[in-house]
Image (cartoon, rainbow, N blue to C red; front, side, top):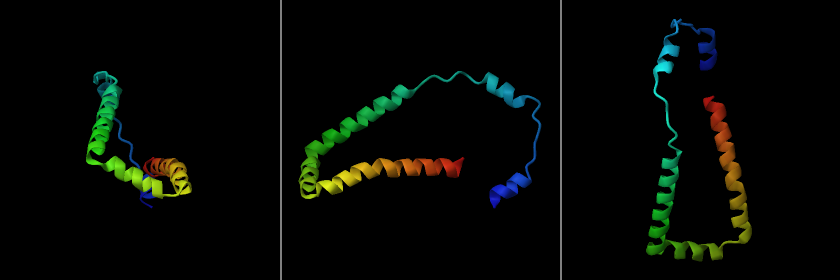
Length: 95
């Protein structure tokens, strides 16, 4: 209902090339993907070290030995499917 209202009452404001001038003057962006990879590796390392020394891994292993393999397989298969559904649904909502 809101999107229909805005579609009907859309107003175009001419900027006389202002947006293009601003975009042309913006500095070039560099690729900072390496920061994400380093922080992910650091966070994973910290989690593994803290989990190992706190006994969390032993607790998880003992729990997983009691769970049926079919339950683990179902969770392992369904998690990516649910994640994909959520991502696609968010793209549709926010597009």
